[in-house]
Length: 441
Image 1 (cartoon, rainbow, N blue to C red):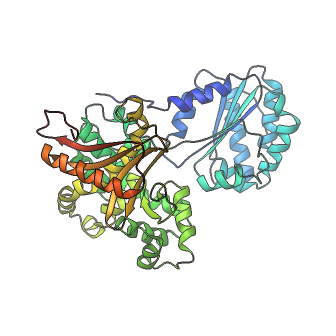
Image 2 (cartoon, one colour):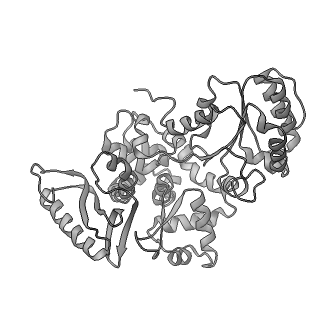
Image 3 (cartoon, one colour):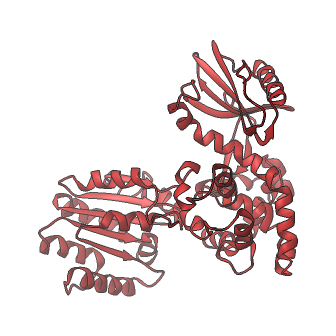
């Protein structure tokens, strides 16, 4: 069964089309980690429009301008030369119909000419604002876009029509990558590779999970190399970030623990975590309704799997003992997925609410813990209702499920989060002998 070529970016595509339908100039910023699907989205959006798509490379500015001139000649048959902004200015004078210009990997243009953004601002204010042009600045350098282009001090602050961070797909959005997989298998593959389209495409939908894991962990394979390659590209001290992520993957989740085990100066650990947050690799979590304590967890499933298995088993893998590594992974995979499954259920809360499976309006979604007590997922509509959820990645007998729900109700009573109306839900792979409804059914 063939995959669809363009998968589940309908919301982003509709947003771009709405901006295109406007009569005036629109400056749009589209960014996100590499392989997240930006180029595929923009190519889809450009269909049927008169457009220029230029992907910058890390080079000197004069070479970048020459490349841009070549692209303009190819797309528009216009022999324009000179500075990029001068060429854009000429294009809007020479072309009567509405134009779309996409500058991809825009950070390389600014690296080559730090004055470019200020000069762009001047051009927008003096000329482009009245033209039939949509200019999209796109790139994968997330910190650059968030800090340099979208920040208050940016020269183009207040001039963009929209900014769009392209994020990883969620579980319900990846089915078309693996059309023959059942839900349990789909959850398994999502747990090991996440929702980055460029990673999902590297797996074979006709192969089993075990066979796809072999693809991921074989030295020289793209997914074997991607984690270290991305970190080397995005951060200045990759070894420090490796130590931090390996420590988190090993179950250490407080700033103090991570700094100690990873041997990072406790005064610096916050900045390292902040950059990993910007890259959507880790996230901070705190118990719902409280500001402290804070835990750190790896939020990107591909990185979670890579540091839980590929990094840990590197000696076996580089010694070509792939079967031994796979044996270890298969033996422990259910335990690994059990932690990811909690996050999956939290992600699905809005969909479950729309389907009336969860009755609490999801004003707040989170977790709760205190000492040795923990509730996996909590949904709150403060002052109205709360739904407490236990999440188990295993098959349960009905009597065990009822016992877990009774324990959940007890933990909820100790959490300080009960509402006038409370619901208790258990998610598991399967209730193997469930055929009669009850309070704990």
